Image (cartoon, rainbow, N blue to C red):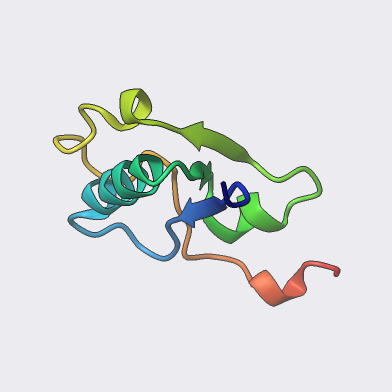
Length: 86
């Protein structure tokens, strides 16, 4: 048995059609491979904040999101991701 894999999904920039479909597809495929999937909320702000804003994504969590507008993870097209201290 190999080591456990984990991936993060985030949406950044302006909203566009299909974001939730991609989140759902990535979650389904990665979960079917036994990978852990984390959804990063509020784009790079959620990823680079002092306490990263990540939620576990699963089949149940992404069920029914295809008809919802926008992105379940939230997004932003403002700010400078390079302004965060490393």
